[in-house]
Length: 90
Image (cartoon, rainbow, N blue to C red):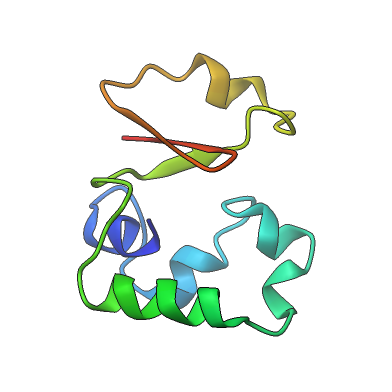
């Protein structure tokens, strides 16, 4: 999804700018980004670099069980993909 945002004209053009955009990712906001990556994280990053996109081009995501922003629930979307506990949207 980060790569989708880099490629979208709606978002900044660099990895760092996308990841650290204010309130863009809860893992940045709550500090999880600084945890040591596990093997699954490395595989996911490599897949993304190789062009694998399980979100099919989505730009937004949220966990409906924990999300506090009503904005995501009300956002119109022509596409939604569910992966684990997260909903991804174009």
